[in-house]
Amino acid sequence: MKLLVCISKAPDTTAKIAFTDGDTKFDENGVQFIVNPYDEWYALVRALELTETSGGTVTTITVGTAADDPTIRKALAIGATDAVRIDADPKDSFYVAKQIAEYAKANEYDIVLTGKETINYNGAQVGAMVAELLGQPFVSLATKLEVAGNVATLERDVSGGIEVVEVGTPFVLSAAKGMAEQRIPNMRGIMAARTKPLNVVQPVDCDDLTSVVAYSKPDEKAACKYIDPENMDELVNLLHTEAKVI
Amino acid sequence: MTVVVFVESKNGNLVKAGLEAVSYGKRIGETTVVTFGDLSSDALAGAGTYGASKVLVHRGITEGNGDQLTQLVAKTAESLGADVVVLAQDQTGKSIGPRIAAKLGAGHVSSAVDVPDTSNGFVVKTNVFSGKAFAHVAVNSAIKVISYTPNSLAATKDGGNAPVEELNLDLGDNRITVKERKLQEGDVAPLPEAELVVSAGRGLKGPENWGIVEDLAKTLGATTACSRPVADIGWRPHHEHVGQTGIAIRPNLYIASGISGAIQHLAGVNGSKTIVVINTDAEAPFFKAADYGVIGDAFEVLPRLTEAIKKFKESNN
Image (cartoon, rainbow over all chains, first blue to last red; front, side, top):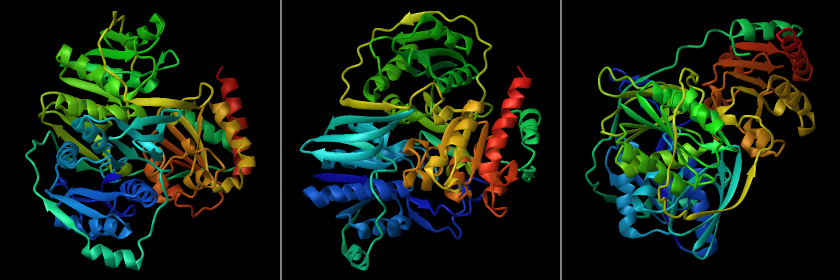
């Protein structure tokens, strides 16, 4: 089995969210970057489990600059066979999807796996776009994946419940919670990752279909209003007259 | 501008998140709704009420499947020469929105929380950093696809009658076969579009104690949710889990009891308009994100709140 896992870096979940350059850029100062958890815990780990039982390779692909290399090495330390970095500073999801699709087209994978979204931009776009650009089926929000020969059985989230679906390879999926458990890289993995191939590839031309003009922050919440636990009538009254939600 | 809004149907009705998207579309331009399935004329008329000037229905598709739905929306947008395509960013929207955009060569904006600002270009305000910030995204392509975040704007019923036309497009095959579908029972709103949500966490001490949570939810007409640890240990089903790794929601009212409010939980609920936190621990971080706080024992406070809601509903009837 030949698997491609899309890896993105993301700020640690506890990172302070601030912006610079007139609120047009995310302030990376002092921010710890991690592998986007959906890419790592769910997509990458499940891909590794599959190749460990039935053989094959797991390649990671990242669209980014040399600043992304530490997160790519982390993915290699967890167990990926090799890594590809498309050398570009991506502007939007379509740009990323286009680069990944071009690479995947030339190298023919059985399954392309992405996380369901990144925790910084929350776009949930790349996987679906890659599928469309490759002309392959897309299974969104997959929580389980089993592969037998060239047929995969998946569970996925749909509104108000779950679906069990069957699809032939090749296809693209986005992985959600449930696919696999987090793996902590061990010392052997970390050492091995230093010498695993990280191939840097030049990007193909692509227009910026969207661009971020500015960032802003939500209004600060007013201080919490405390209600006497004996007096729930007052809470109901406030929800009705003040918050106007009931 | 010419706008095409995709609205999903479920059990013979247009879904609420989709109808909100219709009102959203109407604020951008002349809106045509495209939907599918076995829908009565009453159900289809709803789209007109929310602002559509025309409704197109494809009855050949009975259940949503990404391959055919992508074709349905993209082909409709092309044949109408649409400037903007809008769909709700629910599970179906996440599966087809970016595909429609890639097919049309359109810029795609996901998690939109407001109508586009067209005073200088076409700029859409979106949720990023798990609700901790907004990005204002300019769409530079001729056609634009917007995935609208449910519950961001109220649906407005200021439309009228919209003529309904049947669509007979060839949408090709579904390459994905659905073997089984397990959907929640009853007519409670699914979490992403629920306006009222009652949630509980480990403070409830065991799954056998969820009766008081369900009583409150039932009295309010709310959907139940839970925190991650509770879903992980199997006290509650996974589809109830809200938070960073679960479902992100933005209801009008979120009542959380026995949840401390870890940053990962807040990331999934901080878009809620009003947050009520009930916890015995006055130091629980969740109180910082709350509008109303009750320092007290959920086992006493929840039944008391349920009674208060009942009393309120009786006096308002």
